[in-house]
Length: 77
Image (cartoon, rainbow, N blue to C red; front, side):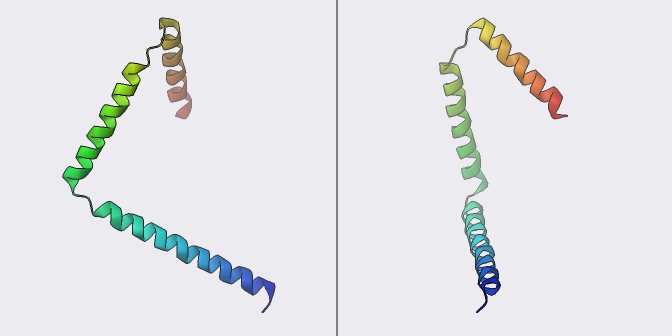
């Protein structure tokens, strides 16, 4: 067997393996009910909000972060 055939077969096997991983993840994702998804999102949001409240920045740093966030928004357009 020539080397390019082996490379082609390895590439095809990689594509198939990736497809299998995607299908499994999709099945796992669709197994949740909308209420379960909503509950999980609320839990994650509460954790993120609690972590944000725990970290208090001095006023100067807070102002700097707001300016940076605004600049990111402007340049993203």
